[in-house]
Length: 194
Ligand code: G4P
Ligand code: NA
Ligand code: NA
Image 1: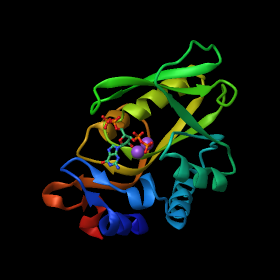
Image 2: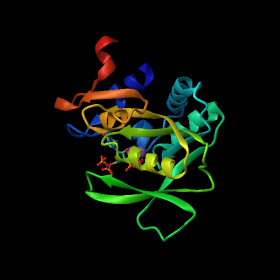
Image 3: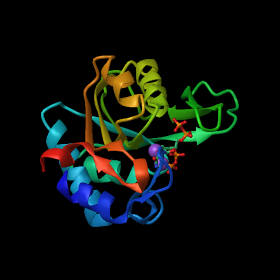
C-alpha cells in the first residue's frame, strides 16, 4: 500500500535492527486520513468474506480496526489486556507470550460480543512473533466463531510471526512488509518492484 509505505519511509524511526518506531502516525499520535485509507484497503480485501465482526487488541489495533469496521458496517471488538484476571465465566481468556518481556499476559473478550457463527476478521498494527494473533485465535476458537483472515498494518517479515500464522492455512494480508531494518534503513518488501 503505497501511502503507508511512503509514511513508513518518511516518518518511521529505526530504533534497532528489530524495532521500528511509528509513534507519529500509529502507536501514539494517530494519522486519521492514513487510518481511513488503511481501513479502506482492509475492507476492500475482505469485502467478499461475509465478515460479521472485526477483532483486535488494545490499544494500537483499535484505530485501523475502527476504520475497517466503519466501511464493512460491522462492530469492532478489542481484546482487553489484563495483568491478572479474577475468575470470570463470562470472559474468553487467552495467554499471550511476550518474547521481549519473557512473560505471558492474559487478554480477554466478553462472551457478550463474540458468538458462535460470527465470521471474524482479525486486525493488528504489527505482526512480529505472532503471539498476539495466536491469543486472538484461541479466543475465536473458544467462542466457536470462524476466522476469515488476518489484516496487519506492518509485518516484520524477518520475524517468525508471518510464517507461523500462514503455515496454519490462515490468510494474512499485510499492507506493508518490512524486509529488514539493517544499517538504520527500512527496506520494504514490495519496494523492490515499485
Ligand atoms: P513480542 O515479544 O512478540 O515482540 O511481543 P512484545 O509483547 O514484546 O511486544 C508486543 C508489542 O510490541 C505490541 O504492541 C506490538 O504491536 C509491538 N511491536 C512489535 N514489534 C514492533 C516494532 O517493530 N515497532 C513497534 N512500534 N511496535 C512493535 P503492544 O505492546 O500491544 O502495544 P499497543 O498495541 O498498546 O501499542
Ligand atoms: Na503496538
Ligand atoms: Na498491537
